[in-house]
Length: 102
Image (cartoon, rainbow, N blue to C red; front, side, top):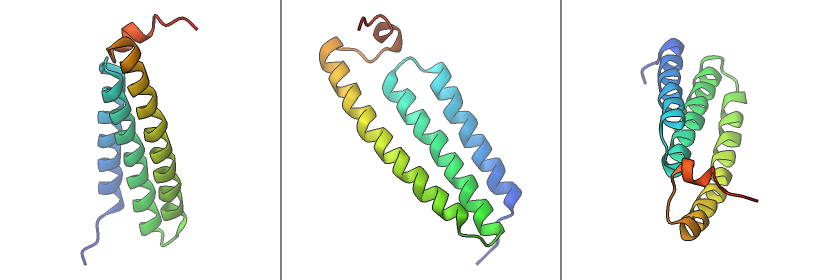
């Protein structure tokens, strides 16, 4: 099994994090923003796994399991909210949702 240098894994995680961040900032559709947030969470998970593997510690894997749990909960709640908002407003545009009154 070949060894992947730690720096390469960090560069990949950084690139994925930037792609996700740009998706959150640039997109107006809340569904795409939610997916970009998932990309950001997974990039952090890659960094934890790579660091844990390089340092021969299980901490990276434990943090990745925590991130996966957080991501699953975020997707479940986020998608439920988006479905409900889409039923009420017939749109997922963040600018239209910004005009909601409590």
